[in-house]
Length: 232
Image (cartoon, rainbow, N blue to C red):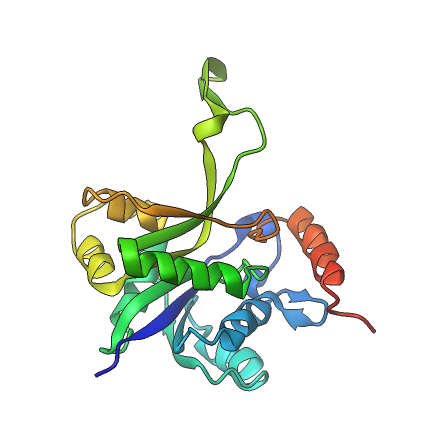
């Protein structure tokens, strides 16, 4: 049996900071839901064999009809409901993976500007090292603060801002998610670190933003115009 690579697109977050009455994944960006833009990248990436989409409660039909069927994303093999925390949502996505999965690429549904090159590089790296996470060097000076008081200034040279995709050999990921961890982790690679592994960094992109606030939407509109989409 040939081994395959699947994506898990996490789109179950409520997006409270967006200050809207709908899940941010379904907000339109140049006439198409944010989640649709993200899925399109995975649909076009030839090294991705299939995709699991993790959605919020009662959003399965909405996702299937308004995104998967409407835009004919044939690589979506299953839509599953997420949980209370990211840990639960990713765990549900892992349980839905087909048995022939060897490498799994976890990506935020609200990061529509990921490139196929980053996805490919993350897969190539995970095949060698077991795991790979996209990240970029921080641009700002970062200070450690306690009770609104600076304790110390951190060395910027060693600090990277973590993004997705985060890519793993599926056996390693399953081992991590079957171990007792705090479910409040917001980063999947933290679970792998808890097993004693050191995930490999690949360079992401400053354009690979996560759309979280109304200000991010403005940036996203500029980015999508820059790459020539959404023109009338």
